[in-house]
Length: 478
Image (cartoon, rainbow, N blue to C red; front, side, top):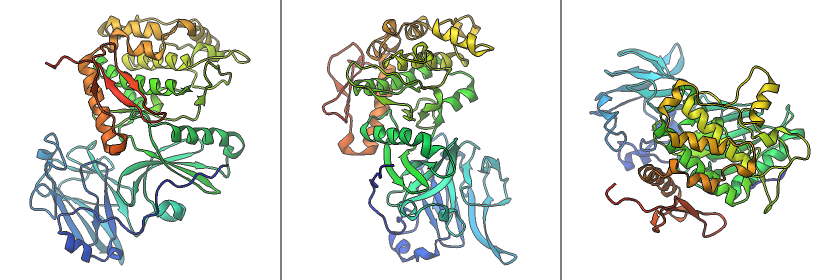
């Protein structure tokens, strides 16, 4: 396959992290004596290098003190003055790393509570949560016993590899940290040897890489680096720490309409950007919609462009692909039947239906009946859950799940639909999106400009890559 150059400069050595100890004390520490690291999974929490035999953590007189700079008021009061201790001890001639729970509200390792006054052995990639099993704060990295030898040096000199986030047919996704900035990222590892990837999937992978290199939008996962080796391809991407929309739906069954609207609006902005660049995603589904955090109202990120394809102006596509539950009717007809980017609009309708109801609009006991219902858009709102959903939301679904693509709502029409003309929601979403853009770099900052347009949010593209998000006129009293 084509060689893709690394986009990151090589970084030598460990990055010096912020600690309670003074900078001069830290600089005196011999980096070779660092036996472990607490890698942060939260933006405002430092990464700690462990070189002494024992450290305490808490919001009081601890070696490493947590403050309002690290946690908000929903979590900080629940953290004890001395919450936990991490130590290195010798046990029967072997050195082990122990975590001792000293808290009132609990310290959790891999979501299991340790228990006040009790100790557990910490192993590489163990997750540490504070006060609640789901409040993850650290991942432990064992500098002496880890799996770095499993990765090529051109990867490990740039990234500290950490826990597995997911696994698929051709590889896995792992959490990683940039060596120079300690920024969290996701590394998709695709196996080339011992699988069908070389024969059947190399073009798909090339396609995804080139496409991700061409797009830049705050609601689309960003490609950061590609490292190609004879055995594997390592695709380094922006990390969405809230997991998949699919998992959130699986946990909650269905989501409140206000939450669904917040997600759908961002997803529509991402699709608008792609369609204006003549890109059709072709596989929009909850598994490919990632959430920025565990918060309810969070950024969403569209990902997995393995099935995407560039479309020339006014052209149509003839390749069949996609996930059966979410694919448009025109994709069910194999052969010469062509289709356009309206296939994404159908998928958006199915995602909207599933998010509001907790079940798909098209289901059947056999494939033939499922195909019939999809091709003829046979679905209903008979379930009791739809009594809690607004007519405007249902109208949006009706205009997206239209079997004739020519009559189906396009992305511009979807963004102007009455259901999305919620200025408070738009302001909240755009503020969050622009906040995300500011975290990337000043050069990629998207500004919120009031242009007096009250017909919905538009994406103004001053150049071929970087969009500027433009908001409608908001009521100044909001």
